Length: 130
Image (tube, rainbow, N blue to C red):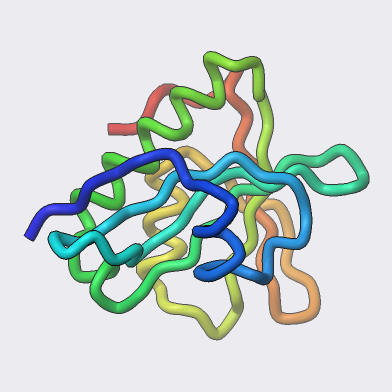
């Protein structure tokens, strides 16, 4: 059960993750049949902030090692392209695994508001996660 990781194209974003209404750089994960089972990347928000996002199917969630490796590679690529800070959110009612994963990627908790938790990643203070 491997995942092929490739740069996402507009079709992937429109079909798999239409909730990202802004410009983004993303990667897509495909299962053995070529079906997109996960999408993640950075969205460039209108106010200038950059937000990490992911949309994962249950099939993708069953492959945590591959997901983590892809996320680490994405963060390294973003850092090499000069992106030095990112925000991310997790839902108050979301799975605890999401919070453990985002911490492992180097994000720190900032605040909670309206059922959402805000996290921050700063390339200058975070070591590359493993």
